[in-house]
Image (cartoon, rainbow, N blue to C red; front, top):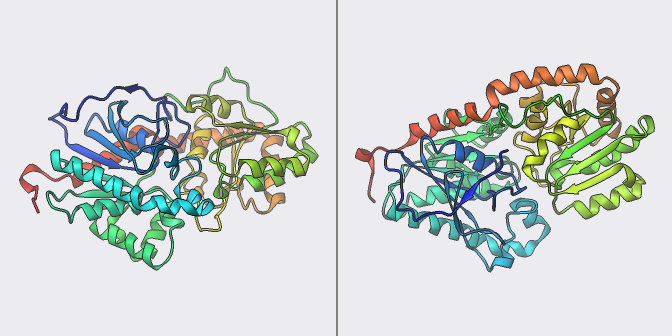
Length: 423
């Protein structure tokens, strides 16, 4: 992920007339330049500004600007509650926050209606050519509902990233997902496993396209021979939430330390489970071998990947059903030449391939520890394996390739002036 540059935003009237207008609806979006929250929606959006005028509508958060120009993207952040209560999205994600704090369900109606209102206001005064709704629920539902409001009918592409598909289960959510898919001009998912899941809901497979998010293999996530790779540092990067499986990695650390007493685990990330994980490390007596870095700026991540002996992503399916849609942190680590070990959830097979010996069930601490120890004991072979993986992944997951694929999907769904329809 790139470092962001922020500039004051002029009024929307300063539009670029020769480019189609792409309206992006999102929930997770950088609150400011250098935000440690996931930034993949912005990374895609900013790479589309050469072909579209990109306007993003996302939720406001404490400390964020209401409007700004971020890397050429016009960002509008709508308020859905008093500022100190705008905590539905960040520090764990919507699904996790709702499960941990039931009162936050009270924020959902204003969160959804606020984004719908902000989008409708732009539709009223701008000739939007296509909408990109990131997440089927609620953004896809908002885009579908907007087609029934007076003024304009605008085609939309809905993209599922994982939690909306896996964690939101039941008759009503599944009915809404099918409704969104039926209304969408196209539906994209970020892994083959998600495509199968969506087809299993009865969605027309011909409308579903696998289009992953990307990684900057050219400039950012690249090997650097000037950085010495450790022989004993394990690295974890990600939100501290259940589906990341960090508690299982802490259990496996006991077995790793029995054979590599100098091993250390560096944890870069933040989230609602941090206190519980720190307590677990203390109970296991491994707190001296575990370092919680907290939130790490995006620009520091490449050097963490470059110096680690092994990157461990012990993904699991959470009790809610939520799981990784793809696992871009794995791809980032591989981009920097770092060997990886990952939890055996279906989407990871898109990265490591079927039957990889470095893809294990992290709920079995012996299996997880054995996979880690194989890397620590044979750094030469595993480094070559990481290099081979990097070459294969760069061909299909580099951001330039990914952005080009999305641009084609969005351009194919754009309405033309002679087809614009007033309702």
